[in-house]
Length: 250
Figure 1 (cartoon, helix red, strand yellow):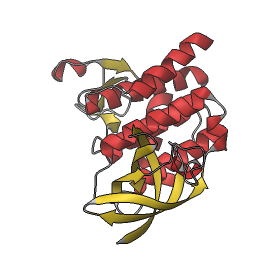
Figure 2 (figure 1 turned 180 degrees about the vertical axis):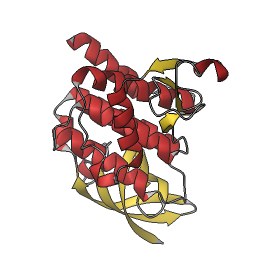
Figure 3 (figure 1 turned 135 degrees about the vertical axis):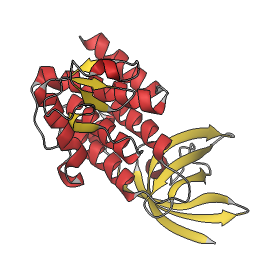
């Protein structure tokens, strides 16, 4: 049986001498696993369209539950990202995080759009890395079911809370924070909270359109990263590599 679908390659694993196993986030079928035969060969016609972070149209055939790539045509290769090691490592982190949320046989077009739009914002639009990272992380948390309360204090309802409780996923006032369970609380500037509210509530096609000062943007990126790691209870190797590159350039 043949199947045609579009998908973004989230992970690739070398297998045998020239094959690869591809973890692909598809629009119609959620996360799928494809086998790409001979793709590591120099003469492979599939090599370009079956590389990590490539969005392609796949034609696959199924045999005993295994999907093998028959044809693949690249739709978007995000060339601009591949020219910059920082950008491609950040995009790889997006892919690793998205794979945690993606499920097999469970279409999630919002997740796919989030990944594609984030990579487009990094490469084509050249948006600040911290802005794209923060928006991606917080929106991904929302798609995973961890939408934070950012419009008011989660305890008293005051409209100007100045802390964010990572484990509880809510803003709190300085006077209310002791009423919540123990956990890390990060300072929250008014501009940061406004940006978080925008990210949570805005239309998907406007996700990367907000503005924030460089200092608060760096703080927001650190906060959203900590929030995602806290809720997912794990770290990501691509993020560690990305952060190591930033340290070297400072």
